[in-house]
Length: 478
Ligand code: IFM
Image (cartoon, rainbow, N blue to C red; front, side, top):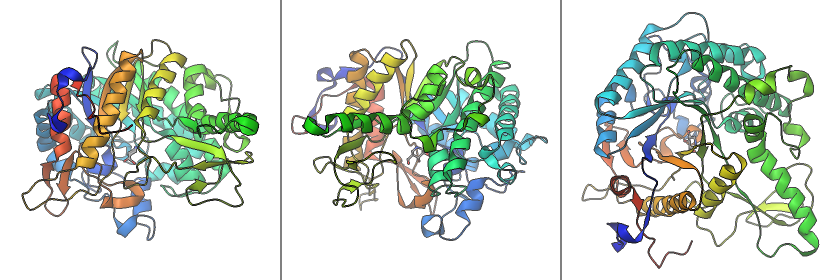
């Protein structure tokens, strides 16, 4: 075992735990113009100068469109029982709706058959951000019609692929679509409009509800359907109560509604969160009769993506210190900050496995009995091929070890955790960062497309094989 620990001293995961790795279509497939695929908003965005670091695009990416059998072999070699991938809507419906592209369906059938032959269950995400450009031209997610087109697309793939998919995820991280894509504009389609972002939020949720129902009308009974949300625990600086206690608690509620409640409350409880800042709430006229019931149709599971928490402390937004950021609108006397004592990944994201522990217990309490899957967790690191031909990504091994330990502890302490998918199987196109940020447990040499499992792949395969995480070395503080 790594780090000289023995699995016997670690923590076991529940029996029957799902072990997987995750990817997304635009990040790995390439073949952007092949076999009838239509353009997506990410093709348009990445080809716009200045939007993606180094001018990188997903045109080739990991070439998984052609190399999927090799990737399926890799998944099998790690001993994983599941693979989470996304379906590119513009491969199936190049114009967003209407004419179906059979070649697109055939590609996913072949991928699913390759997985099935190797005994790997497929978890298919319908939407991981690659909206057909034709729909964006008609208003994109700001238009209610896009939610209806999404349900049409869900029905088409359910008919064609429903017998081969073990689990369905409607949307991946809708907050990133609304916020990064429409409020701050760092993702496709690059808009910066609060009102548009609020409309997008509602239509994504409606699309989720309609697509879940379209799937369930076709797929074999009992096939689980869920949604994946990236959740962000909100922490208050230790010892920062006192005279600031009430203000901090109010700021915590607002920040929590912004990061979590805005998508979690509608899908779990059929309502928008009470404490959400006004700017992010969809206006009443967009919420039609029956929408909230459609959105809150019972989930079979919730996918949780976890990367880092948010931290709050008293402060002056007019005079921010080095590690501080402005608060959300409507909060005064409180700032967001990055605790110096926490290490960071090369994305500058905080490493805080306790956040995952807290999150899993919180959601299990809020939604008793709902199975949770960690559908993404992982980190970018400065990986390199050393002269021995090895990528010894110790930072990632430590990151995974800490987070898997937190997940196992949460399951032991009552969280309803059923599985874990590492982000990501492969180094890939990391959105606005292009290929500079490597998240894979398998290294990709983008010049040759050679795949080389990193040390983290061996560590993860060991955890999977033993269904247990080794004890943390005593020298690591968490
Ligand atoms: O690469 C992304 C993924 O597409 C969505 N979740 C976060 C990952 C890392 O940024």
